[in-house]
Amino acid sequence: MELNEALAGKTYPESTYEVTDDAIAAYARATNDPNERYLSRDVVASPVFPVVPAFASFMNAAMDPDLGADVLRLVHGAEEHVLYRPIRPGDVLTVAPVLESVERKDSGETFTVKAALTTAGGEVAAEVRGTMFIRGRGGARRSAAVAADEGAEVVYEETTKVDDDQTQRYAEASGDHNPIHLDESVARMAGLPGIILHGMCTMAIAVKGAVDGLAGGDPTRVRRAGVRFSRPVLPGQELTTRFRRAEAGGGVETFSFTTHNPDGKAVITNGVVEIA
Image 1 (cartoon, one colour):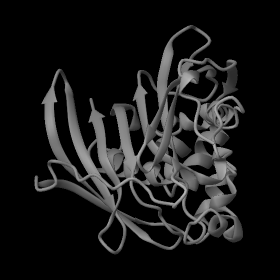
Image 2 (cartoon, rainbow, N blue to C red):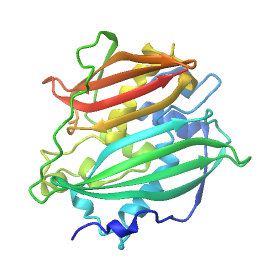
Image 3 (spheres, one colour):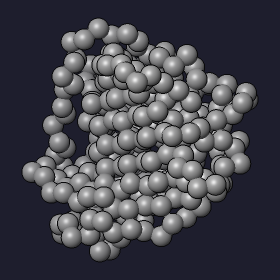
């Protein structure tokens, strides 16, 4: 069954999400991020946390019978967060989702959902855009793109180990209980080598490096973060993210980045982060 391209532009019901200290801290711990801004001092959410209030809307689209997505072949293809103001405990966010696009490719199909997160005062706090990839019947993924500036000087590098229980902890903190991240038999049935890490946990680990090494530990300086997921990550692997300066202007510095597994293969390509 193919995705219904005519469904692009469909809006889904709005929902509300109340941000709490506990939710922010749980997400930080589930992504191995000890930054005190998430845990104890002048608490704000991480730049990747907006996926938590947006997640249900992504699943509403994925499970929409009119779209026709085969969720057993679904993996996360790409993600972008545009951040307009810090998200803090006590914020009550209205989540407004829309199915932005549906596309067919040689290796599979994609659909993109955008969710705007608006405060009770009517201020847009963040826009979350997630692209889901439905793998072809042969199980092939899209070939990984190599960033054009791969040879540029690395200005910061950070390595983080994925814990053996990382997928369980991330599922609890994020609400993403997709069985390919939790059940070995389901993951293998889906054509995967075993349980794989949530793409958003991989992104959070990478963006942690941007906050640590480029933003002086201040997550509120991150204005945009985007990634393309190019390869599954397995529990127990070490991930190394390398950042390169791309451009500066208008009070914002833009950095590109890639994240690699221990074999040197990219698990994130086309990474970009903007720091104010």
